[in-house]
Image (cartoon, rainbow, N blue to C red; front, side):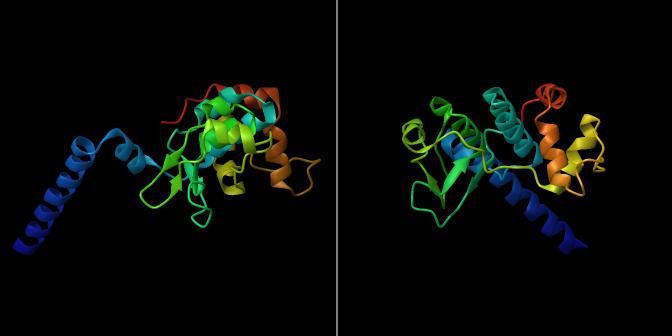
Length: 177
């Protein structure tokens, strides 16, 4: 029993030390790096609706820390913020921000790079079927594919994202932290 209490005490002390270090010792840039995460279904939903509606205000709803990347891309192009990719896909290059982590460098994804290299196109972050099936009921939609879409859940959910009714429901959702 004493060994278990000792282990718990050590874990609490180490965990508290890590928490203190991250929250009190690191600068803003390091805190942002610690907060980066892969986009979830909501981030992908907002990107998809932004593209479908051609309305960049949906990009603002995406978590400013959602990122994706390809570590095998050239240095400077290894990571991109999902929100920046959304803005870039709609030609809103002034809102693109670079991002970097300890191991991946996305410093070249800047407004200037966007203006020189992006054309208006669909963002890479699209909802997976699993993500869509989790979110659609929250918005009052069925996960059953209605007649007229065959068996294609993708066609059904993609069609929904282009309707004004669906877009209004998504607009009412809170922005991501």
